[in-house]
Amino acid sequence: MTFGGKITLVLLLLAICATAALVHCHDRPEAVNPAELFNAVRGQLAACQDQDFPTAYRQVSSKFQQQWPMERFAAMVRNDYARTLKPGRVEFGSLKTQDSRAVVEIYFIDRTGAVTPCLYTLVSEGGAWKIDSTRWGKTSARPLRGIRS
Image 1: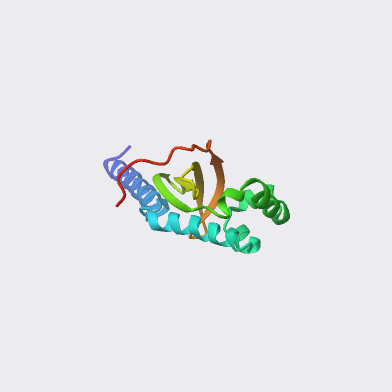
Image 2: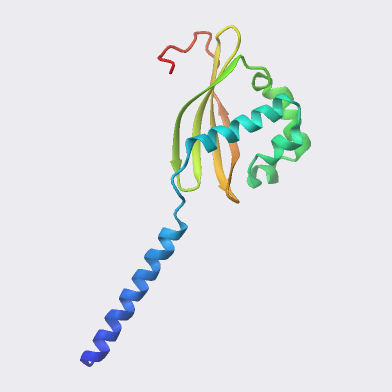
């Protein structure tokens, strides 16, 4: 291979690497604003509390919608997740993000102080955070202890 051929090959490899780096950086999601995640959860909770199940359903991921028709979703919320419809208050805990997924700890606290933890998994779809799943923990009769800000 001639010297000019080697230079051309090196320049070609550099161009390929630079293009790959640009594409990778372009596909990387921006830093996640926790308020966006919290607002997505609050929006769905508010819709469920108002019995506005079509709005609440629009806030779940497309994967969830493929597995659960809207009527089954509404029945599930009414029957299995009644504790989300009338909590005394809702507290947000830690969150973890990776790429276009996020997991948020949420605590539903009833009027007696009993706490029900829940992990909400959200996915980024079309520029918005959608709820993909929830995983409920056991309700504890002991109130949360800690520092409130």
